[in-house]
Length: 84
Image 1 (tube, rainbow, N blue to C red):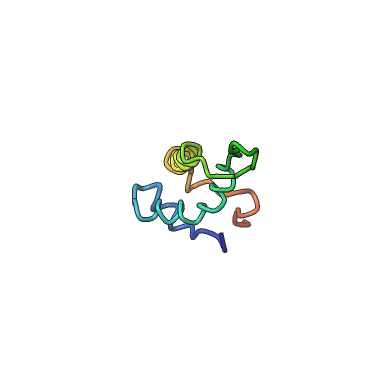
Image 2: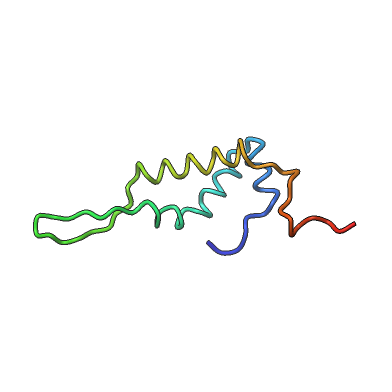
C-alpha cells in the first residue's frame, strides 16, 4: 500500500468506473486481508491464520458502498480548504 490513491481515481470510481474501483480495491487489498484473518486450529492444536473470504468480501463491499454513496467530491477536509 504505497502512496495515496489519486483523487481522480476516487471520483471515477464514484461515477461508476469499474477499473477505477478495481484499482482502489487492489490498493487496499493487503490492508483488507490483514483485517480478514481468522485463527484456525488443527487436530494437533496448531494455530493457523487464514484470510476468511467472507469477511474479506464484506469489507470490500463496505468500502465500495462508502465510495459510491458517502464520498462527496465537493467536500474537502478542513486542512485542504483553499484560503481566501
